[in-house]
Image (cartoon, rainbow over all chains, first blue to last red; front, side):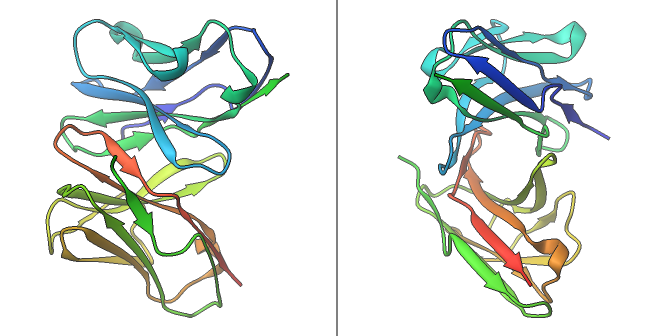
Length: 113
Length: 111
């Protein structure tokens, strides 16, 4: 069965620290990859997505992610986090076969001012 | 901007009650989805619909049913609520571009 694994469940960083959240998926075919973010009390919203082309994808608010096909990974990065980045982050994979989005377990990021 | 609305932000129901969760989207999207969100489990797909009157089971359909009579509206039904259905329920809609737009969620407590 297809699955998505996020390695870090709870991350605590100080402002200006660099961030990398891991995401690995199990599906071997053509995939579309997403990172969603849920700020406290707000809707889940799209941070960035990868469909094809340049494996380094830039999203909103200074986030980027790199698709490494050989490692089945789509890690999220930000060079310098801010207190306002405190949120829950979800990696999601859509397989071309099923058309469904499979979400990871989520990573809670807490940024200390 | 895409807008997905859900009928209630918070809902408290008793075991055995029939529960209706309503979702409306205003972007004429063909696809609509119901998920539940639980700590440590992420989002799990309950049901989805690619068209009016069409529905497909997701990964955890047991204990749930859905209805889509109009393109903009997708309802989730708990025929007989149980305590293990206490959760956050998220509705989403999407077009052929595969991106999904989420509603604010309904936090359902079954006592």
